[in-house]
Length: 520
Image (cartoon, rainbow, N blue to C red):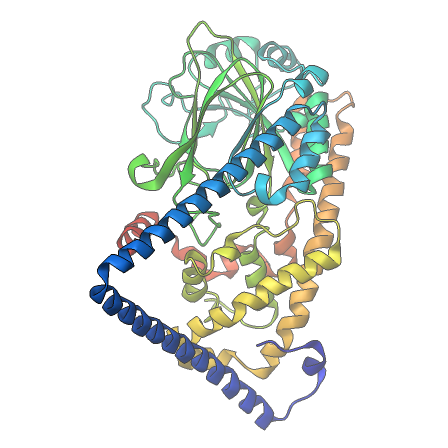
């Protein structure tokens, strides 16, 4: 499987191809056999240790106690260091006077700050220095200048506030109609209001989004959520497909963020990769979420970050409280399919591992690949491509090609085990020779497309100062953003749902939970 570039260029005879295929299958089998031998040896050693302990129980108990104490002490020290480091980071960020300072810190501290776990920072300095003039009154004021009810400007299902609906579902109040102050006053008494693409109609929000995109090197967007006081549920428990940064502008909002059952869900492999949204099923706290990680009332100046796929819900305080106005900054990776799994499929597709006529077939890209990506062994393929803060194309290309090569043998082994006859018809020399050059070509395409998308999104904000209706500004930005599709152009032709037939089978979350509990 690990064919170098020079070897791929050489023409091989039919006998050479057959021998290489046999070597590949033999190596996979030998690796499997070696693993089984190691497992057997470990069992023998474990049994010997058990016999020794049976003859000298006191000695074994003493040894275990010392080891346990050493491990506990090491874990305590590690936790102390991590807590101290996190506190130092939070203190450093709390002194930032600009958004760029905060986003630069995130870009530099990727492993600890981004994609790993929620982070909460109370920061009043930036709030004092870049006061965001964006309140409920401001929204009421701009309603007279062409703001319409649309997929950009919506309200939450009114049943949410009263606990009658547990689905995060937004819809236009009166689609296509101009928004009036009277309507806003009325609907916000019973529902949360969303103003989409806020950066396209507010200069301060535009500055925020530019800072995020310039530092993180990823597409980003901002929505505004306005909720009056006294909502037991402002937004029901749900998950999103993007990394989320919450910036509280005014008022207060109570946030609860939970540990996810499935880390880094991926569209197609895990259904829609976001749960309890639109017309989906509500999330069951007892079976689908882990422990409570964040339980905090956000106040002006607070910044909360949590990775994609983390369940969260919100509420507001007493009825007498001011309206909560919060900016939700979405940093897009998986929501634009920028994950290793999509890159993996793209390389296989370009290398001829797919039938080009429906129904689409590929032994490595249907049940086998989905099963592998859902497993612990294949979790790395769920992670976002390392584009965040990445400016070196060669470094990016080598990194994702390395991940591809690391998992390719394992996926191939599982494909052979699942369907040996069909797999051998696909593992031809011609297809194998295409893998490496295509892996490099598509990796370069992803990096270059990211650069073009960021440039287009930056230019889309240039109309902010033009004297045109607000809904036209929103629509223009969304049009540019919706065209930001990297993999569709590279290899998926007509969309992933059409090409990858295994995605059409859906994803049974309840069955996954049941099997996960049985395995545990």
